[in-house]
Image (cartoon, rainbow, N blue to C red; front, side):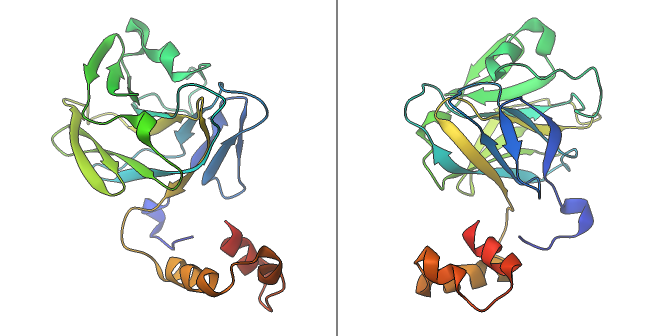
Length: 217
């Protein structure tokens, strides 16, 4: 995992949908069992203005319809009054104007919906989707590092803004991915896996278990 200054370290909040399991480092979320809903997840801290929060698609399950929903909210997951809904579509009402969510090709803010130039349903395993709020209040999405432009404007910057997503339908597992150049850890991992592709051989490497676990992530 990249080593970042503390203020930039970000993971996933313990408040989550009942079908979601988080890894111990709070950077990976999986929907458990034969389920398709109850997969809401928040970031564990507010986003910095200009920060890009990214999710990597790690597992898809073709038996279900629909897929990841992803956006931001000014609802603080630390507050008891912040409820966990069954699915992001339950937020598309007049009572939830503090959520901005991309679902399919549309961005939703309460009852307002707007067509966007990208379909979240097109994401494949290993694709990376990012969200960013800029200093002028624009909500931007990034696909594999490329800015897709403003999905919404006039996001309220005076409030804390959290990332929020729904591991829904075909999307089974995602992980938080650092936005930027590859770290030394990632480069070393890529090089090792280039030469040791067999899992059994990987487990027999004469290195600490914590490194073997990292290589298998």
